[in-house]
Length: 310
Image 1 (cartoon, rainbow, N blue to C red):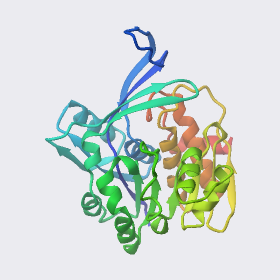
Image 2: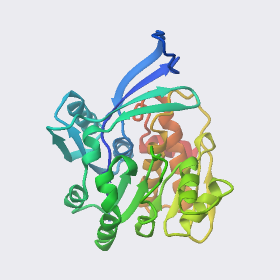
Image 3: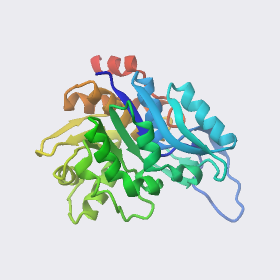
Protein backbone atom coordinates (compact mmCIF):
# COMPACT_ATOMS: atom_id res chain seq x y z
CA UNK A 1 0.00 0.00 0.00
CA UNK A 2 1.28 3.46 -0.90
CA UNK A 3 1.82 5.56 2.22
CA UNK A 4 -0.33 8.65 2.64
CA UNK A 5 0.74 10.66 5.67
CA UNK A 6 -1.41 13.15 7.52
CA UNK A 7 0.66 15.50 9.66
CA UNK A 8 -1.24 17.35 12.39
CA UNK A 9 -0.24 20.22 14.64
CA UNK A 10 1.30 23.65 14.18
CA UNK A 11 1.74 25.77 11.05
CA UNK A 12 3.53 29.11 11.08
CA UNK A 13 6.47 31.12 9.79
CA UNK A 14 9.86 31.40 11.46
CA UNK A 15 11.90 34.59 11.53
CA UNK A 16 15.42 33.13 11.80
CA UNK A 17 18.08 35.55 13.06
CA UNK A 18 21.76 34.55 12.89
CA UNK A 19 24.96 36.05 14.25
CA UNK A 20 25.11 38.15 17.43
CA UNK A 21 21.70 36.97 18.63
CA UNK A 22 21.98 37.00 22.43
CA UNK A 23 19.94 40.11 23.36
CA UNK A 24 21.53 42.89 25.38
CA UNK A 25 18.89 45.17 26.84
CA UNK A 26 19.37 48.85 27.57
CA UNK A 27 18.56 49.78 23.95
CA UNK A 28 21.79 48.21 22.64
CA UNK A 29 21.73 47.78 18.86
CA UNK A 30 23.30 44.58 17.54
CA UNK A 31 24.23 43.77 13.94
CA UNK A 32 23.14 40.39 12.54
CA UNK A 33 24.80 38.11 10.01
CA UNK A 34 21.48 37.04 8.50
CA UNK A 35 17.71 37.19 8.79
CA UNK A 36 15.28 34.92 6.93
CA UNK A 37 11.47 34.64 7.03
CA UNK A 38 10.84 30.98 6.26
CA UNK A 39 8.37 28.15 6.75
CA UNK A 40 8.44 27.16 10.41
CA UNK A 41 6.58 24.86 12.81
CA UNK A 42 7.41 21.28 13.65
CA UNK A 43 4.40 19.91 11.78
CA UNK A 44 4.95 22.16 8.76
CA UNK A 45 8.67 21.40 8.45
CA UNK A 46 8.12 17.65 8.88
CA UNK A 47 5.35 17.69 6.26
CA UNK A 48 7.59 19.58 3.82
CA UNK A 49 10.42 17.13 4.48
CA UNK A 50 8.17 14.13 3.80
CA UNK A 51 6.91 15.65 0.56
CA UNK A 52 10.49 16.40 -0.54
CA UNK A 53 11.32 12.74 0.10
CA UNK A 54 8.50 11.72 -2.23
CA UNK A 55 5.86 10.78 0.37
CA UNK A 56 2.26 11.84 -0.32
CA UNK A 57 1.65 14.24 2.58
CA UNK A 58 -1.14 16.50 3.78
CA UNK A 59 -1.25 18.84 6.75
CA UNK A 60 -4.09 19.61 9.14
CA UNK A 61 -3.52 22.87 11.01
CA UNK A 62 -4.89 26.39 11.47
CA UNK A 63 -3.57 29.78 10.36
CA UNK A 64 -4.93 33.32 10.53
CA UNK A 65 -6.51 35.35 7.75
CA UNK A 66 -3.40 37.50 7.31
CA UNK A 67 -0.20 37.88 5.31
CA UNK A 68 1.69 35.35 7.44
CA UNK A 69 -1.11 32.80 7.01
CA UNK A 70 -1.18 33.20 3.24
CA UNK A 71 2.61 32.88 3.05
CA UNK A 72 2.59 29.79 5.29
CA UNK A 73 0.13 28.05 2.97
CA UNK A 74 2.06 29.17 -0.10
CA UNK A 75 5.36 27.76 1.18
CA UNK A 76 3.72 24.46 2.16
CA UNK A 77 2.18 24.12 -1.29
CA UNK A 78 5.51 24.95 -2.96
CA UNK A 79 7.02 22.09 -0.96
CA UNK A 80 4.39 19.70 -2.31
CA UNK A 81 2.19 19.47 0.80
CA UNK A 82 -1.59 19.19 0.40
CA UNK A 83 -3.02 22.14 2.38
CA UNK A 84 -6.73 21.46 1.86
CA UNK A 85 -7.08 20.85 5.62
CA UNK A 86 -5.18 23.96 6.71
CA UNK A 87 -8.07 26.10 8.01
CA UNK A 88 -8.05 29.90 7.94
CA UNK A 89 -9.35 31.70 11.04
CA UNK A 90 -10.59 35.28 11.05
CA UNK A 91 -10.36 35.84 14.82
CA UNK A 92 -6.75 34.74 15.50
CA UNK A 93 -3.42 35.77 13.96
CA UNK A 94 -1.14 33.24 12.34
CA UNK A 95 1.43 31.93 14.78
CA UNK A 96 5.02 33.08 14.43
CA UNK A 97 8.36 32.06 15.96
CA UNK A 98 11.49 34.16 16.26
CA UNK A 99 14.55 31.89 16.18
CA UNK A 100 17.76 33.23 17.70
CA UNK A 101 20.16 30.85 15.97
CA UNK A 102 23.75 30.35 17.13
CA UNK A 103 26.13 27.72 15.76
CA UNK A 104 25.61 25.20 18.55
CA UNK A 105 22.30 26.24 20.11
CA UNK A 106 19.20 28.34 19.58
CA UNK A 107 16.40 30.09 21.46
CA UNK A 108 12.80 30.21 20.23
CA UNK A 109 10.16 32.87 20.98
CA UNK A 110 6.68 31.82 19.83
CA UNK A 111 3.25 33.41 19.49
CA UNK A 112 0.87 30.49 19.04
CA UNK A 113 -2.17 32.40 17.73
CA UNK A 114 -4.35 30.31 15.40
CA UNK A 115 -2.08 27.26 15.46
CA UNK A 116 -3.20 26.40 19.00
CA UNK A 117 -6.81 25.99 17.88
CA UNK A 118 -6.50 22.81 15.80
CA UNK A 119 -8.93 20.16 17.14
CA UNK A 120 -9.52 16.43 17.20
CA UNK A 121 -12.46 16.96 14.85
CA UNK A 122 -10.15 18.68 12.37
CA UNK A 123 -7.79 15.70 12.39
CA UNK A 124 -10.43 12.98 12.12
CA UNK A 125 -12.20 14.85 9.31
CA UNK A 126 -8.95 15.03 7.34
CA UNK A 127 -7.83 11.45 7.95
CA UNK A 128 -10.11 9.46 5.65
CA UNK A 129 -7.38 8.15 3.32
CA UNK A 130 -4.39 8.49 5.64
CA UNK A 131 -2.26 5.39 6.24
CA UNK A 132 -0.21 7.16 8.90
CA UNK A 133 -0.85 10.03 11.34
CA UNK A 134 2.08 12.07 12.63
CA UNK A 135 1.35 14.63 15.36
CA UNK A 136 3.80 17.41 16.23
CA UNK A 137 4.09 20.12 18.90
CA UNK A 138 1.78 18.38 21.37
CA UNK A 139 2.10 21.14 23.99
CA UNK A 140 1.27 23.97 21.58
CA UNK A 141 -2.06 22.46 20.47
CA UNK A 142 -3.98 21.96 23.75
CA UNK A 143 -7.40 21.28 22.25
CA UNK A 144 -6.00 18.44 20.14
CA UNK A 145 -3.69 17.21 22.89
CA UNK A 146 -6.61 16.76 25.31
CA UNK A 147 -8.30 14.32 22.91
CA UNK A 148 -5.25 12.83 21.24
CA UNK A 149 -5.47 9.38 22.90
CA UNK A 150 -8.97 9.01 21.41
CA UNK A 151 -7.80 10.23 18.00
CA UNK A 152 -4.84 7.84 17.96
CA UNK A 153 -7.03 4.92 19.01
CA UNK A 154 -9.57 5.76 16.30
CA UNK A 155 -6.93 5.99 13.56
CA UNK A 156 -5.34 2.71 14.63
CA UNK A 157 -8.76 1.04 14.55
CA UNK A 158 -8.96 2.13 10.90
CA UNK A 159 -5.62 0.43 10.19
CA UNK A 160 -3.39 3.51 10.23
CA UNK A 161 -0.08 3.75 12.08
CA UNK A 162 0.71 6.64 14.40
CA UNK A 163 3.62 8.75 15.61
CA UNK A 164 4.18 11.72 17.93
CA UNK A 165 6.93 14.30 18.32
CA UNK A 166 5.94 16.21 21.45
CA UNK A 167 8.67 18.88 21.18
CA UNK A 168 9.58 20.74 24.37
CA UNK A 169 6.88 21.52 26.93
CA UNK A 170 7.06 25.28 27.72
CA UNK A 171 5.47 24.55 31.12
CA UNK A 172 7.88 21.63 31.72
CA UNK A 173 5.03 19.57 33.19
CA UNK A 174 4.86 16.98 30.35
CA UNK A 175 1.23 16.19 31.19
CA UNK A 176 -0.94 14.06 28.90
CA UNK A 177 1.74 12.14 27.02
CA UNK A 178 1.52 8.99 29.15
CA UNK A 179 -2.07 8.45 28.02
CA UNK A 180 -0.95 8.55 24.38
CA UNK A 181 1.88 6.02 24.61
CA UNK A 182 -0.24 2.83 24.35
CA UNK A 183 -1.76 4.15 21.11
CA UNK A 184 1.51 5.08 19.39
CA UNK A 185 3.67 3.07 17.03
CA UNK A 186 6.46 5.67 17.23
CA UNK A 187 7.55 8.36 19.67
CA UNK A 188 10.18 10.78 18.31
CA UNK A 189 11.69 13.00 21.05
CA UNK A 190 15.14 14.51 21.22
CA UNK A 191 17.50 13.32 23.97
CA UNK A 192 16.52 16.02 26.46
CA UNK A 193 12.80 15.49 25.82
CA UNK A 194 13.15 11.73 26.27
CA UNK A 195 14.74 12.22 29.68
CA UNK A 196 12.09 14.76 30.73
CA UNK A 197 9.24 12.51 29.57
CA UNK A 198 10.64 9.49 31.43
CA UNK A 199 11.04 11.55 34.59
CA UNK A 200 7.43 12.76 34.30
CA UNK A 201 6.40 9.10 34.34
CA UNK A 202 8.25 8.56 37.62
CA UNK A 203 11.49 7.09 36.27
CA UNK A 204 15.00 8.38 36.93
CA UNK A 205 16.96 7.51 33.78
CA UNK A 206 20.73 7.87 33.87
CA UNK A 207 20.83 9.00 30.25
CA UNK A 208 18.76 9.30 27.08
CA UNK A 209 19.18 5.63 26.14
CA UNK A 210 17.78 4.51 29.48
CA UNK A 211 14.95 7.05 29.09
CA UNK A 212 14.13 5.74 25.62
CA UNK A 213 14.01 2.16 26.88
CA UNK A 214 11.71 3.23 29.72
CA UNK A 215 9.33 4.96 27.31
CA UNK A 216 9.45 2.11 24.81
CA UNK A 217 8.41 -0.36 27.52
CA UNK A 218 5.07 1.47 27.52
CA UNK A 219 4.32 0.69 23.86
CA UNK A 220 5.99 2.62 21.05
CA UNK A 221 9.34 2.32 19.35
CA UNK A 222 11.19 5.41 20.63
CA UNK A 223 13.37 7.15 18.03
CA UNK A 224 15.65 9.75 19.58
CA UNK A 225 17.32 12.72 17.93
CA UNK A 226 20.80 13.04 19.43
CA UNK A 227 22.22 16.20 17.87
CA UNK A 228 25.57 15.91 16.10
CA UNK A 229 25.80 12.29 17.27
CA UNK A 230 22.90 11.35 14.96
CA UNK A 231 20.17 9.31 16.55
CA UNK A 232 19.09 5.98 17.98
CA UNK A 233 15.96 3.89 18.46
CA UNK A 234 14.81 1.73 21.36
CA UNK A 235 12.21 -1.00 20.90
CA UNK A 236 9.70 -2.29 23.47
CA UNK A 237 11.92 -5.40 23.73
CA UNK A 238 14.93 -3.34 24.83
CA UNK A 239 16.89 -3.43 21.57
CA UNK A 240 18.82 -0.23 20.76
CA UNK A 241 20.14 0.68 17.30
CA UNK A 242 22.23 3.78 16.48
CA UNK A 243 23.18 5.82 13.43
CA UNK A 244 25.72 8.65 13.24
CA UNK A 245 25.08 12.10 11.80
CA UNK A 246 27.06 13.55 8.90
CA UNK A 247 30.04 15.82 9.31
CA UNK A 248 29.36 18.98 7.31
CA UNK A 249 29.40 22.78 7.51
CA UNK A 250 26.33 23.80 9.52
CA UNK A 251 24.41 26.89 8.43
CA UNK A 252 21.38 26.56 10.73
CA UNK A 253 20.10 23.75 12.96
CA UNK A 254 16.51 25.05 13.01
CA UNK A 255 14.08 22.24 12.17
CA UNK A 256 16.77 19.55 11.89
CA UNK A 257 14.79 17.36 14.27
CA UNK A 258 11.68 17.66 12.12
CA UNK A 259 13.68 16.67 9.03
CA UNK A 260 15.06 13.75 11.08
CA UNK A 261 11.44 12.74 11.74
CA UNK A 262 10.63 12.99 8.03
CA UNK A 263 13.61 10.84 7.08
CA UNK A 264 12.72 8.18 9.61
CA UNK A 265 9.05 8.09 8.62
CA UNK A 266 9.82 7.93 4.89
CA UNK A 267 12.05 4.90 5.41
CA UNK A 268 9.91 3.19 8.05
CA UNK A 269 6.76 3.55 5.98
CA UNK A 270 8.66 1.97 3.07
CA UNK A 271 9.08 -1.09 5.29
CA UNK A 272 12.84 -0.69 5.74
CA UNK A 273 14.52 -2.29 8.79
CA UNK A 274 14.69 -0.18 11.93
CA UNK A 275 18.46 0.34 11.74
CA UNK A 276 18.17 1.57 8.15
CA UNK A 277 15.30 3.89 9.04
CA UNK A 278 17.38 5.46 11.83
CA UNK A 279 20.21 5.97 9.35
CA UNK A 280 17.79 7.70 6.95
CA UNK A 281 16.69 9.92 9.83
CA UNK A 282 20.23 10.88 10.80
CA UNK A 283 21.19 11.68 7.21
CA UNK A 284 18.04 13.70 6.51
CA UNK A 285 18.44 15.64 9.75
CA UNK A 286 22.10 16.38 9.05
CA UNK A 287 21.53 17.53 5.46
CA UNK A 288 18.78 19.92 6.58
CA UNK A 289 21.36 22.05 8.39
CA UNK A 290 22.92 23.11 5.05
CA UNK A 291 20.48 26.01 4.62
CA UNK A 292 18.73 28.70 6.65
CA UNK A 293 15.46 27.77 8.33
CA UNK A 294 13.85 24.39 8.65
CA UNK A 295 13.31 23.71 4.95
CA UNK A 296 16.15 25.59 3.22
CA UNK A 297 18.46 22.57 3.17
CA UNK A 298 15.98 19.68 3.28
CA UNK A 299 17.13 16.63 1.36
CA UNK A 300 15.56 14.89 -1.59
CA UNK A 301 15.25 11.11 -1.64
CA UNK A 302 18.10 10.97 -4.16
CA UNK A 303 20.38 12.99 -1.86
CA UNK A 304 19.68 10.74 1.12
CA UNK A 305 20.24 7.60 -0.94
CA UNK A 306 23.50 9.03 -2.31
CA UNK A 307 24.82 9.64 1.22
CA UNK A 308 23.76 6.17 2.33
CA UNK A 309 25.57 4.52 -0.56
CA UNK A 310 28.73 6.66 -0.28
